Length: 239
Image (cartoon, rainbow, N blue to C red):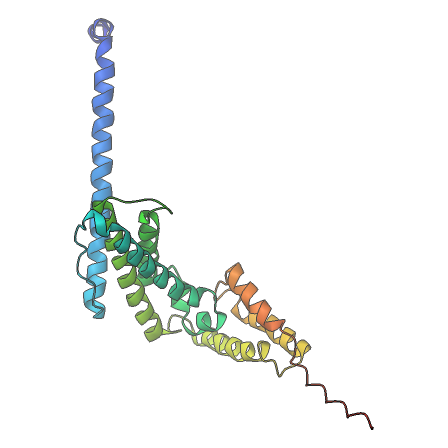
């Protein structure tokens, strides 16, 4: 022990390069883990694509600088289109009831889609940013993964519908869907719509999570005023 302390006392300066080497090794290991995780994610998406029969776009080539602007705009348009298609489920209570798997992150295909969305969102260049051709190719590939993952998740959600629920829970979903029709029916009275709306929320409680935006959209539909009958045209005054 004393010999070690004497050695450390004479060669204390070795701590700094050894620390640097250790941190460098840790950084290399973390980088390798990140690359491995991304590779596994891509492999999982490819397996999902093959199993589902969804056709993916060809891998993005490295584009030349003059075409970066146009290619970026096209990639962003595809990105936005997929996000809008997803929001059609997230913000439409009727669709959420019909295809609950699309909002259930516990479903493997939905979870894979949400991971692909996160990757594409993180790689999306900021407004006004001019990415390098290599960065643009990476972003375009992420958008393709996002698109494939969404197609697979959507196809599966439409196939299974409410199969993950028990018979009793499926009955509650059916009841909620029927009541939803009353809640947004302008032919119903305001009181009937409000009662149906509250029943919808009760039936869905514990089955499907509704985002604040979905609730807000539904409440706007429920609160629409009844169409008023046209006022009769007054008679012409006698001459």
